[in-house]
Length: 471
Figure 1: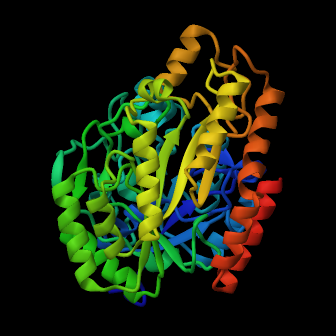
Figure 2 (figure 1 turned 180 degrees about the horizontal axis):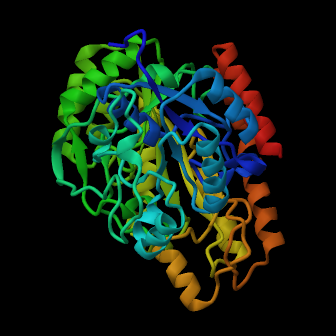
């Protein structure tokens, strides 16, 4: 319960230059999607702030297009007792410099950073950052399990626990969690109401407002290009009933759509069946979408998901050639992929195919084969992403070792940061644009999009998606 004099603690998605989208490490104008939604990390931390006795407050400076100066003015007017800010790997030093100035201008209130998986993996770099920025009161490395609630207590002396003279190389204010793998993880229930904003939407959204939920953490698969599977080597599931009650609360607050941020929804079949049955029995007004693998989406599982309110699924298809997919830890046949997409059409579950264009040894014909294969699946959406060797991934390590990493890249998914044996950057960019236009401007897709429009929300989203595609 919120008290009238309750002090607030700010969850911050900070300003960013050049339309950099921190949560996806890509530039919005170059992406295959037109979407913006709150960070799951900040959502997960919001409940811990409330349980510690503070009122969680939220500012998305990217969405509001705030400069750092404008952000300072806004914080001064609203008043906060501390800040927890997202950080990015590529703009880390710039963001830390701004946060230091912010802290000083606000009288030395505690400031925490939410560290990236890249930082978590690179312990020497993390130690250097903490040593060089001793004004920073801590680095949160794990938003599922942390001791944040033990460190922040409201009151006139609340700043004192944050003041640390120096950091040891392996000592963090919010340490890396000792994860208990399995099911039954309990976290403080998030405060979704503070993230409610009509401007947020998913690429597939039918109606708003929208929010994000995470039930499972981790991924047992070792896709070479992925950074998200580096934090947990096994799966960790939240308590099923806790997540159901969180969804009930989200429905009560008036949200209409939820995006599950699990890397592979439904991988634990027994838990998934329990969760979906309980969710279906609650008969909520929510609809939801998720990401999973083709080899997880059996017909029975898809039927359960549909009954529980699922309207859209994202699948990593990646490449047209089975030999390439096997190298990516996706030993899935063309026939199985086509079967699952057909099953989704039968159940009226919309599909999004994630496609990776131009691996280092791909030829132009390989890329065109992949584009054609994606179209043949008849998905509702395709996300065509040029291959990048993202920091901290095994693919980056191999690219550096084998000499095809381009250090000068800005990591925009449209450009790529690898050297190709058979393609140059101009060819790659041309192929990406052709891929986007060949799918989204095809008569079948355009006609179906127009038939599916049921609201002004959908029409506005469709127009924005078209503009992003032409960009």
